[in-house]
Length: 410
Image 1 (cartoon, rainbow, N blue to C red):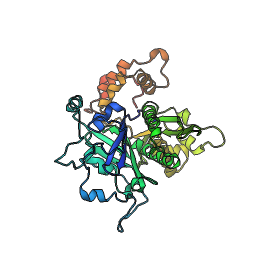
Image 2: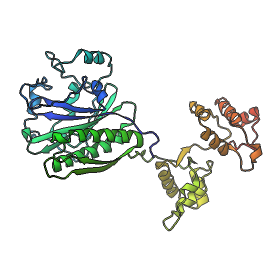
Image 3: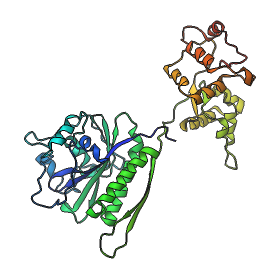
């Protein structure tokens, strides 16, 4: 389960134009156009009209040659089957000094631009979002001006200019969020769009433009709110007499787990969920795991659990690593009254959550404590706060007169 869903700031589509090079086709939501592109994205109703003003070239001469044949490879190109990820902390600007970009901006647009401090410089990263063919269908990650941009460039052969359609749906997130959860999402969405383009010209046909925007907008909203998106979109017919077609797909964010950690025989496992939830029923239950869980009392170390459960130490370590991987336990050091302990700044969270306070009281009391003699959260918080690491725990207990019959100090 994902505790907090990383929020998508924006999604934009980049296409490679046969004359102008990489350009942004649209931005979702539309009001983020100033930040993503530096100017408002306007629809070109007559994109093939010769009177349409051309944007300045985004590439030096040698870069333009790379797109003469989008699928051409150099003889010395080395293609790896493993996923490739690019990271650019400070992309070098390639904006021509003699031209302005965009060609024309209204006075109202200029007032908006003056208020943007962290706009994305598309000109400086366009060649990364539209790379050479060796990086097609690879997740690309760019750190840029406080944002993370995830892309999955795709090239489709067909009856296009230069015999190929090159596009990239780019997901923009704030730099402080965990973007790794979206790697699979960006890849899957790019593959789905490639399949739809091959099957029905979904990106090529302008009749689908509004449907495409609606699809991307729903995807962004669903992922931000629910962490998954189930989309069923009815597409208009492209010719007279043709039936409507439907687009249906599911995309979900899956949590990423930490790597298996190394544990030692003297480490103490601490359950952070109810032990009863770990016990399986039926024929497929794990007897070894049940025996290990039975002896986890937040005091016994791994070697002691191995002795009590009559299971080899290596087997116990393997089981506990498995439980830690799925967030069921944590590890701490052996508890000793001769040790010095101190509270961390995380203690303040105890005052912010009623649920955490209830769990804390149940955790620290002894089994003999009666319901009418439960310690208050005020007493418990005061005791935790007094742990400053300046004396042994045995001395601390005497100084603060801790009633060991009610509170299990361990």
